[in-house]
Length: 116
Image (cartoon, rainbow, N blue to C red; front, side, top):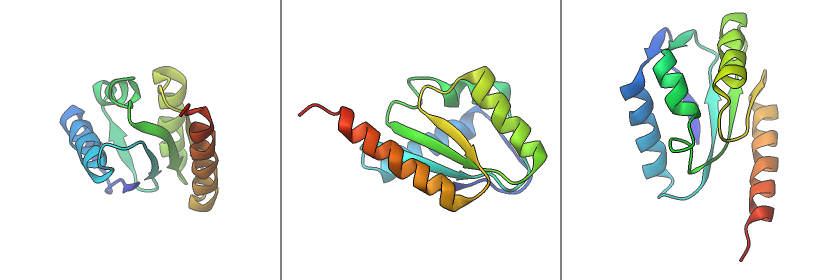
């Protein structure tokens, strides 16, 4: 799933819940990856960051890749990864192509762990 952050928004808890519900519905309750286009300036409340990183919130998420080009968003992304410690693999990239390649590799890893 590709998500684009709108310019100059402040992501709050309800926004995060709405985004998760949309992703789960679009994936038909199947596992999915998120490619987050975070090239626009934005902020995320501490409560929303904690919710997004949590196990319950990310139970269907295989991995998340953030595409970031600004220093401010890079600081937010690094803070999120280091402090909130997302329960699914999460990484920052400067290009969408590199992010997509990493997500594809994460899907392969995930599928190798599935026991049939």
